[in-house]
Length: 295
Length: 287
Image 1 (cartoon, rainbow over the protein chains, first blue to last red):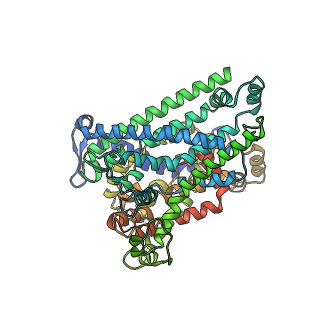
Image 2 (tube, helix red, strand yellow):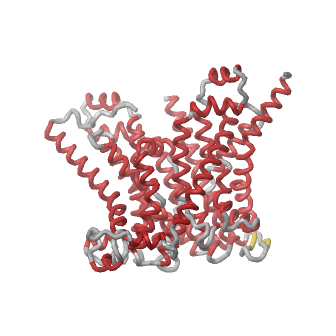
Image 3 (cartoon, chains in turn green, cyan):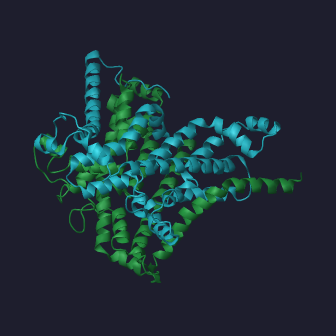
């Protein structure tokens, strides 16, 4: 066989193997993004055909106080959830890494919420927070309206996210901790460092890649939170809703207000924001790794 | 995994005991907080509505009743249907998506052809697209194609391969020793038989991990099924549970029976395959 025909054959086999995924990813991921960008410049309510509008949807998104409110709510949610779950997850991982008897059982229990549907867990927690017949009020002997209270709704939703994700964060830190070489820690102890000193000066810096990965992925997913909010509060209470996160705003714009153009514009803004976060994370990560190799 | 030495090993015995007691106290407290909503929501599902409103929420069901479950599976709610739809959807997506992803990953990992790397980077880039961004255009596309509220609408968007699965598989396939493939080639195997007899058997661990990731994420999926289906015919478990909750708000014994049914299959699978799944979580970091 000539070299040329072999190259052709390999290309044919390669593209043959790629064909299903090229169709799937092209048609159901890449085309939709292009359609979203196109629709974001149009006025469309699903019923009548789309009409060209220009940048009006973007202006409307950027001047809509409800949209800004949603960004604020999402940022508040992120600030409540991420530091809490990261610190708790790290703490649990340190305890689990002591390898006390029973550790595998705790690992399984802590990761349990992570495999459950956020929507279904949200419904369970709606019951936990219910003013009458709810679990939490029964335990502390009150009749607080947790999820319809303006002050308590966002912390309650955030608590459920922390409850769901802390075990998952802990598993990541546990894997990270097992990669920390104990001879460095021992050397520090021989030099007279206390346990707390060893942890903050030696262990934590070595865990930086884990911390970075956990923070980056949880920021990206927390800006897309939807199911938990939908199940527990439906974006409420109040108008604009106290828990009306960005994904829920997009959902309401598209499927309640039937303003698909504006919903698309907001979803494109969200996508661009998240892509920037991901790219920054990659750039930072590359640079760190280069330092470590060089150093 | 390298052994981790106890942080407390050089301290005196009293301090050591204190640390162990503290560790267990925190771990048990955490475990109780995780487990309580599961157990007590199930206990609530085992009460009659009268029992539920007349006794404390914290009391155990006495007598235990399966009335809520019977009602749920009865003609009015017909919860068999969402279970069947969810199982069908998950199985179809799992089998087809995994097969297509394996084919693509094999091409990326073990065959060199022009355009390969560009396409691979394009696939990786699609992992940055948030689900909410594709929901609106997909809704429009499926409505235009007349596929709204059909089984195809549930499976088509994710069936033909997931960029994430392709990425994980490719990393693993690259580690298959070239000698194995060369030996199979000498024995006259073509690409597909090399894949079937060499690469796939070699890559069982990552395929098991991906099976877990795919089943869990599609069983739990909500936003897309919620948007593209309506009415009871193609409602999946999450959609049916949400619908029941909003329709029977306050009827907690019935709603908790629904959440128990929705959660039970994955929890049982989780408990059976706990070690593999816990490890998969820290490998895959799946969502």
